[in-house]
Length: 194
Ligand code: PRP
Image 1 (cartoon, rainbow, N blue to C red):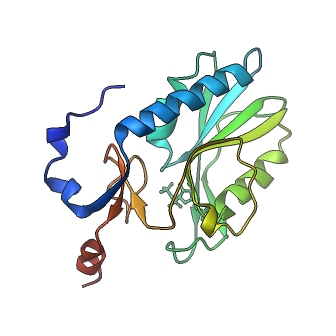
Image 2: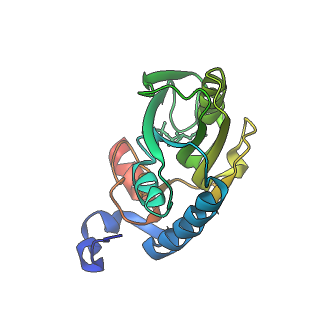
């Protein structure tokens, strides 16, 4: 993986982060471990990796490069209505899959599971299409915030119940490009709210 050099991140958006939760190196190491497990688990099967846009875009890009199998990729995009500081549970499909998943081994990839309501909707929706199997991989699992139970086969890290950004995770659409995961300074919200 080509990571930007550290000095690129001195100043600028890194100044809006109060504390690093996971460094780029920690994420890369764990992603390689998950990739090795997925490689072993899905050998000889028809693996279709499905990224849930937009938050998963960096994780899925790095994860599939650690899976040594002839997998296929697809993406799905959903949007929750209502106050996005908490999921509303009402989900609208923005972009569906480009292909049938009937009889295939589907691995849904998320950046974070919070309440679980988004994945709950997606799992129910995809199950009706009769995949051979349907599993979940998430980089972060915020189990403290869980409302809907989700079975997660592959979890990168347990996530503290704080507002984290970076490595795909956003605040109002920004900070996804930060190569690590951190906590946003409260002053950023104060500025936005002013
Ligand atoms: C985030 C994340 C999950 C969802 C998790 O997506 O990528 O899809 O929230 O929350 P939940 O478990 O409480 O449902 P978001 O709706 O912020 O969109 P994004 O992926 O475009 O950032």
